[in-house]
Image 1: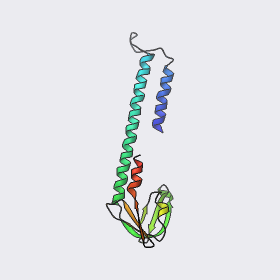
Image 2: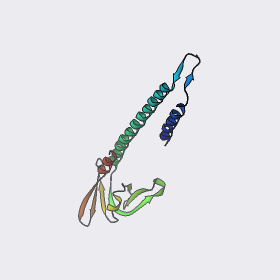
Image 3: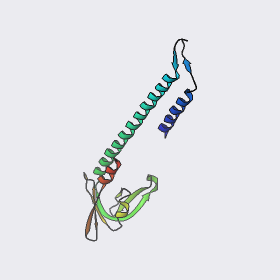
Image 4: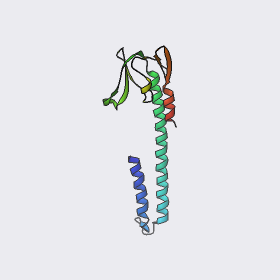
Length: 150
């Protein structure tokens, strides 16, 4: 939001400067023309835009890597006894197991996990294995993380 404000401010200043013919420095002989000022402001806006985009791309890559690392460090197994949302934790979707373990899941997995399911998640993997009525199915967190890259 702040970056958008500064970009708007740059454009506003550029438009405001269109009405100024010359800016004088300490020496009377040194002056910028309106054309030079427009070029300088355009270069400034371009540099700001490049900074904004590179920061945005780096943030997505970091978010992906941090998410992958956190998921791979998780380790749990048990019987699902409850599902809920933690209001004090940004309304995170939580699954509660019979061994006092709780973990958060992506919203895409929320309807796929039911109370009474058996869950296994091994350290170093991104896969959650769900067992229900003698059937096994896989939920892969990496699929969700990959969608962040797009």
